[in-house]
Image (cartoon, rainbow, N blue to C red; front, side, top):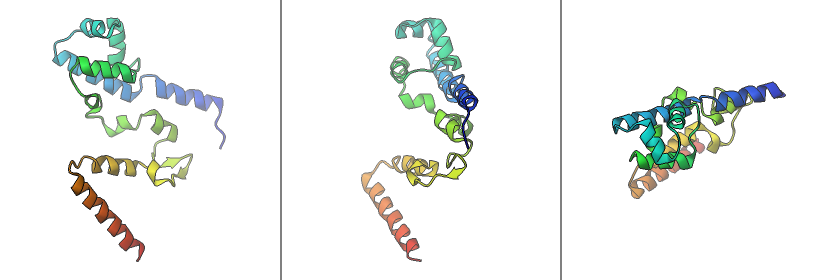
Length: 155
C-alpha cells in the first residue's frame, strides 16, 4: 500500500497542530500556575517569554520543548511527571508515534508487530515492574515469570 504526499501532509497536520498530549500538558501547566496564584505574565517573565507565549503553551497551540518543560517544572515546583499525570487513554493514543501507526498500537500498516519490545503490552509491563521499589522483590518476580514461561513452553 503506497502512501501519498497528501497522506503525509494530513498525518503531519494531525500530529503537530493542537495535539491532545500538548493540550493536556498545557492544562496541567495552567492548573499548577493558577494553584500557586501565579499570573501568565509572571510565569512568562521567569521563562523569559511573553505572556502570549505562555497562553499558547497552556492551550497546546505551541509545543513545550523538553528544556522549557524542565524550566517550568522548576518554577512551578513539580516533577516533570506532573504534567503527564491523569492522562486519559484517548489522549495517550494521540501521540505522534501512535498516530503514525493507526488506531491499534500493536498493528503497523495492517500487520501485527512481531517485535515484543515494540508492543504496548510490553511497555506497560516494564513500567509497572519498575514501580516495585525493592530490587529483591523485582528479581523474584522476574524469576517467577521466567519459570512460568519455561513451564508453558514445555506443554
